[in-house]
Amino acid sequence: MSDERDAIEQRMEDFADSDGTEHEPEEFDPASLGPDIPSIETGESAGASADADEMAADVDEELARGFFSAVLLANLGLFALALGALLAYFRGQYTLGGGAMLVGTVALVRTYWLVRKHGGSG
Image (cartoon, rainbow, N blue to C red; front, side, top):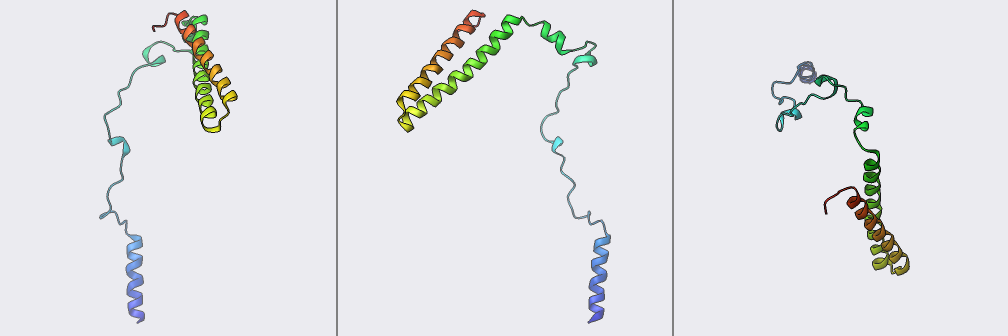
């Protein structure tokens, strides 16, 4: 019986020593899926420095302020309208929900006014 055991141990050692890759598939390369990603030259590789200060100088300060104000007001307006509707419908808090919906409506009207002021189409 010890001969059998020795033979099994020998086979296990041989298997552990072997690489075992002849029956295993190759490693999967996720980059092989999909199309090749095109590259573009930006910044110093294109011969021009693309500093944030230089790019920021190209944008009118009033236009940038109007843009960020409009984004903030639009987010506030949508949030307040949705929250107000949920409070009124699901919790029956009509005063609080109505107030939130009023704040949301005012914020969205102000957003519309800002976009029209800065030449947005609509």
